[in-house]
Length: 104
Image 1 (cartoon, rainbow, N blue to C red):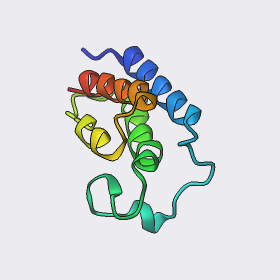
Image 2 (image 1 turned 90 degrees about the vertical axis):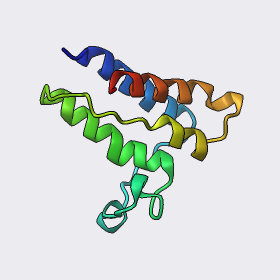
Image 3 (image 1 turned 120 degrees about the vertical axis):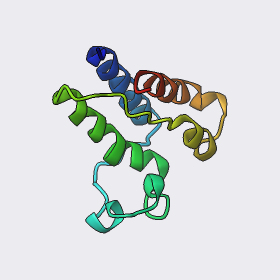
Image 4 (image 1 turned 180 degrees about the horizontal axis):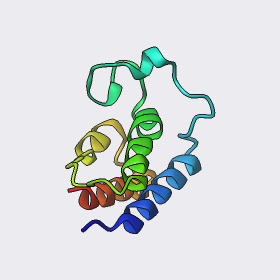
């Protein structure tokens, strides 16, 4: 059984941290940018854009559908690579680690 509430809270925390760090875009990327076939759309999006426009909506959709959340996302290694491990990103990386744990 999945803890959908915990996943929703973790998504809310991630979104709040992205907004706080001015890593939240008002305008979505183009369909062409979103159509990238590379993992994390690394050739067309910044990592935070991928979180905002691909990952977060996909997980919200799974929760709303009460679908299986055992997707084994494991996005923390990419987050650590793409984001500096400075103190200012500690909470953001912790949010991502929590989601990885919940989606394992």
